[in-house]
Image (cartoon, rainbow, N blue to C red; front, side):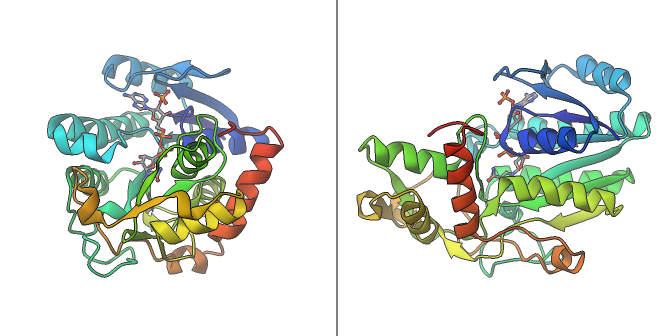
Length: 295
Ligand SMILES: NC(=O)c1ccc[n+]([C@@H]2O[C@H](COP(=O)([O-])OP(=O)(O)OC[C@H]3O[C@@H](n4cnc5c(N)ncnc54)[C@H](OP(=O)(O)O)[C@@H]3O)[C@@H](O)[C@H]2O)c1
């Protein structure tokens, strides 16, 4: 297939591009601020450039892992949040439809309120923060548009990556440097190994899947429990971490506490995401092999 990956410099986008290339697909990948070899620049704020690139690339599939993912930042700038996390995805989807391409993008368990997670695809959303509201608005607008689209909700994505930004990288970097690191004790999710999220995306696409699907790991655990396994795998001292309740952390945006995603639908399609210990061990191996950023 011919694929366009908007946001190929990021975590999920990097894995998508690598896996598409590995299976012999033709890929155009973009970056916004973090230049990487083989990627072309694209700023989603430049609508003409976006439309032009999609028309020129004439892809069969447009992947949009790009978005504004800083949850507390979204809380402070609702207009930017809705522009980048709702209006721009809808615009990209419309442009994809014009060239007959399927549109694939990502959403989050933050569309739920965290009262009773993990959640299934058809559970009622009720976002607690602006990021979740914008992501839910995007889902609804995309589905209402009638376009050929696949929306993957995921959560707590970790694993090897080129930018080395995800939670586990931050944890390893801070603890190895002897710096303080605060984490919440009471935010539950289903951590998701990034390369598997990308592989599941391609597998679903190959099956012709459309609509909303959950793509997440099988383990339901809070952030401290996740950090504990990460410390075991990376030979770090868990007791050096400053574990606080969400109330004590006083983050700007409210967080869903019992969040996470059920993946019965995904598993019924014969697709799965590995558990946290296996994922963390694979992450460490990839880093040590020089296949990803070092912490
Ligand atoms: N990571 C998670 O735990 C998680 C959980 C739930 C849902 N999701 C969703 O999954 C998707 C991918 O997440 P991720 O972790 O892969 O994100 P990421 O690593 O932060 O990557 C974001 C990508 O978007 C690009 N980008 C940002 N602003 C842009 C703009 N204005 N124009 C064009 N490109 C822009 C970035 O480019 P540069 O880096 O070059 O600037 C980067 O390639 C997002 O939609 C996110 O909401 C992620």
